[in-house]
Image (tube, rainbow, N blue to C red):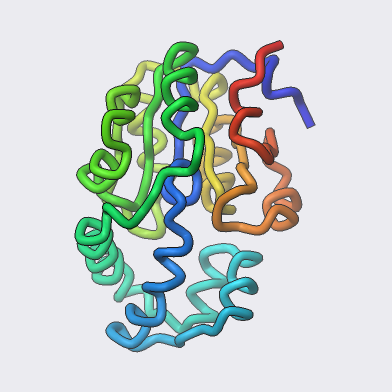
Length: 211
């Protein structure tokens, strides 16, 4: 796999939940309440671990979530995140990561979370992010990446897209950007590795490696 330290991006687009914010425990706790509200399958701890090895389409089939419900579920989750924002921490090192990466390239955040929620959880660190694309549903991330690349005037081939799920890798490929998969978030490491991202990163500090 290529050396990330040798790559000089014109733009870095970061996912939020599972990449910058440690929101997986909150979502795990919330999932069965959402399942009861929107009438899809509840899961136990073992099944939650199984979900970490699936792509988005497989997760929806496993849970039995009808696609027409997705916008309503996403809206509900954004509202619940806004209510519980104080309970969702950033990963240790996120403020330093954003500060130091912003000194090397413009930063953007693309997320299914809302921009307001992202800013609230980032706090003062939001100042390092130039562009936001929030409020997306579970699908359509590539469209948001294209908008961010266009807004920043960046070259797709020199854009790094950093995320913790298979859909982040797929979206990066769809827009011609480089996919950086981080292993401290939602998807299991072996699942991400099997998708062959351009870069696979196990530690946040490795995103800051210098040649």
